Length: 123
Image (cartoon, rainbow, N blue to C red; front, side):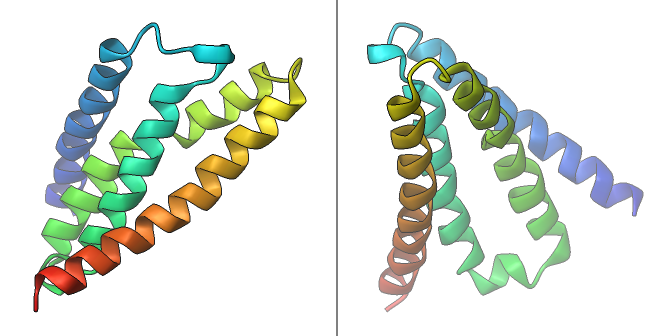
C-alpha cells in the first residue's frame, strides 16, 4: 500500500509539473479572457487517459496503473482549475458555457481518439 501511495505521489509531481510548464509556456494566451492553457491540458489529458486506458498491459498492472493514471494524469489534468476559472468567468456567461462545452465534449472526444489511436496502432 505504501508503495502505491508513493508511486501515485511521484506521478502526481510529474503530472502537475508538466501542467505548470504548459501554463508558463502560454502565459499570454488569454485571448478573450479564455483559459486556453487549462483547456489544452484537459484535452491532452483526456486523450492520454483514453490511450492509457486502452492499453491492457498498463491497466492490468496495478503499479503501472496507479503511477500513470492516478499519479501522472491525475496530477496533469485540472478539473479544479476548470471549476474556478468557470466561476471567474461569471461576468461573461457565454464564454463560460463555451468553455464548459469545449472541455467536456472535447474531453470525451479526445479520450475516444486516444482509444482509437491505441486500437489502430496495435494492428
